[in-house]
Length: 326
Ligand SMILES: *Cc1c(COP(=O)(O)O)cnc(C)c1O
Ligand code: SF4
Image (cartoon, rainbow, N blue to C red; front, side, top):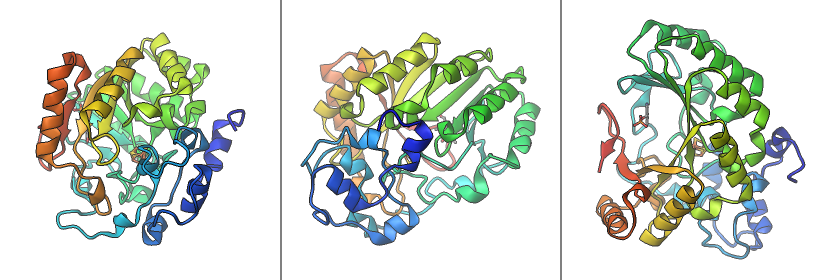
C-alpha cells in the first residue's frame, strides 16, 4: 500500500463503515452507524491512517475519530450547521477575514480523511472554495489590504491541491510585500504521509516568506515513523511546526492522554499550540467535553509538566476578534 502514489492512496481510502470495522478486526455491524450522516458526510479513511488503529479495539481513539457512530443522529439543542456564522465574514467567497492581520483561505473543500467531529462537515464548499474563479478575487483582496500580514491556507486540506497549484499559489502570495507569513493548516502530513515530498517542500520553502505548518493531531497514537519523517522534512527547511487538537470525549479527554500527546510532539520538535473545545456542530454532540472538565484537565497538566507542553485551551465565538482563551 505504501508504494502507491498519494493520489492512488487517496482514491483507495476506506469509504464504508463495515469495511473499516473489517480492516481493524471487528465484526461488520458490531458498532451501529448512521446511514443518514454518511450520505451527507461520507466515511473516508486512508489505509495509512487505518494502519494505526489498534486491532480488535472498538474503543480505539483513532477509530473513534473516523467512525460514523449512530450518535451522529442525535438532535441536540444548540448544535447547528454553521455555529461560527462563517457565511458572514467572507469578503470574497472562500476567504475568511475574521481576525485582524490575517486571512484564512479555504483553498479547497477536499480532505484526505473525514473527521467525524469536524466543524466544516456542513460547509458549502462547492460554492465557497477559493479554488478556481474566486482565486484572483481573493488575491486582489489580499493585495489591497496592507494590514494583512499572514495568509492561512486551510480548507478542507490545502495539501489535497496538486503541487503545481500549491506552488503557483505560494508564488502569487510571495509577490505581495505586506504578506510576511504563509501558514498551512493541514492534517495531511499525519493522515496521508506519502503526500509530502522533498521536492514540494523545497519549492514552497523557496518563496522567501516565513512558513508555518499547523498540524492537527489529537492523539499520540497518530504519530508513527512516517509522520516523524514528515516533521523532520519540514524542520529541515526551517518551517515552524505547531499542532492543534480538538478536545474529544473518549479520544483525548484525560490528562494522561493529553500529556502523552504533548510529549510525543515536543520530542519531535512540534510545539503544542491550541486545544480547541468542540464547536457545536450538528451531529457531533457525543464528542463534547464540558468546559469545566476541560479547564480541570488543563490545570492538571500545568501541575505536572513543563509549561510549553500545555496547549492553549480555546474556543471560537461568533463576533470575537480572535479565539477565546478559556
Ligand atoms: C482560527 C482562525 C484564524 C487563526 O487564528 P490564530 O489565533 O492566529 O491561530 C484565522 N482566521 C480564522 C477565520 C480562524 O478561524
Ligand atoms: S482534515 Fe480537518 S477539515 Fe478535514 S475533516 Fe478532518 S478536521 Fe475537518
